[in-house]
Image (cartoon, rainbow, N blue to C red; front, side):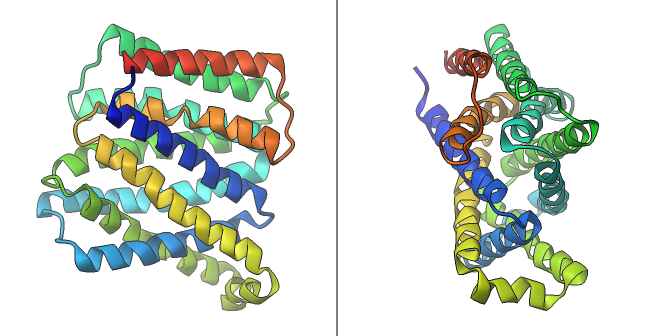
Length: 280
């Protein structure tokens, strides 16, 4: 049976798939990601003002993670521009657990058992299989998704180490890192102008509202993951979180009307089996 922590990480997986579906469902994903970032940065600013500062030892990791997250945001927008949710999301998320496990072994000296290693491999393999079942994946789509997966692995390892240096202040660590999301509206305005950011408040309030909601969901999703990495192995937490690809497939099928065939369902069973291995 999954532990309490494992159950929360699975909840984070559902939340993560939900905000990715919100992002993918909007036509202008750069605009949507920017408004999501405004919500994330705004809430984080409030939290930083009412919580103690993280220890100095954690700050290099906070800065590094915050900057990598901006690269991730831009890369994710590009990945969704080139591919469907059912293809881009599994490649991006499926490639990261193995990279996280390798990074954690190299930089945090983490070791995992055979059963957990099998679970991580099953989850990654199942998710990549999900993407390949969607038909031919273009080179540009695969490259964008793999780049996104690399940034996911990088910030996950950085945060896994950083939060362990925060003296149990996972909330303060997370909020401080998310302050860097203020850079997203700066990038957007520099590229498109202030009017392009503000006009949708009047012309497309529902799209802006869904993006703001997605930002709040994103905070909860990744905040749980950072909290879990205080004591849990980074590769294991990452792999369990990436079961979100199954939720993403279901959301894509139900709400975005994307096709789901028998082979995709089989891949989902493999991912679920990997999650069970992690919970044993």
